[in-house]
Length: 152
Image (cartoon, rainbow, N blue to C red):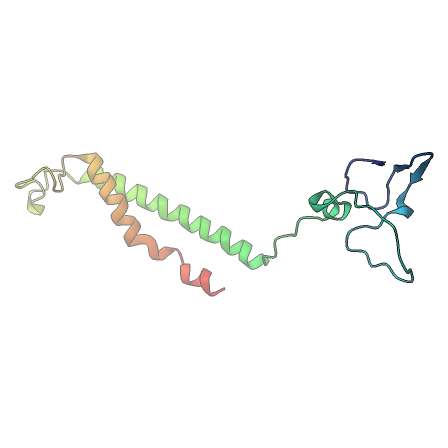
C-alpha cells in the first residue's frame, strides 16, 4: 500500500510511505517519476501509478496559456467598442428627436392620413421611437469598420 500527500503543483517535493507486510519505507522526491519523464541508463524499474489525469503534479503545475493577441488588436477592439457606443448614442439621440418632432402637425408629409392599425402612426411616439432606432442603426452602421477588423 502507498500512503502519500494529496495531489499538488509542487514538482520538487513529495512525501509518502510504502507499506509492505513487515516494514514501512519512506518515499521522497528521488523515488518518483513525473508524467512525461524519460528514464535513461536504467534497464528496468518497479513502479506504481499514484495519480493520473489532471491530478498529476505536472498537470497541476501547468499554467494557463496567455492570450496571443497583439497590442494593435487590443487597441482596435477598444476603438470598435467606442465606435459602437457612439453609434448607439447617435441612434438614441436621433430616435428621441424623431419621437418628439414627428407628429400630426406636419400636414404636408401626410403622415396621419388614412392611418390603419398596422401602418405607421405618428401619434404613437413609442412606435416612432422603435422604428427610428432600427432605421438609424441601419443608416449609421457603416461607422463601425468591420472590414478593417476582419482584414487584420
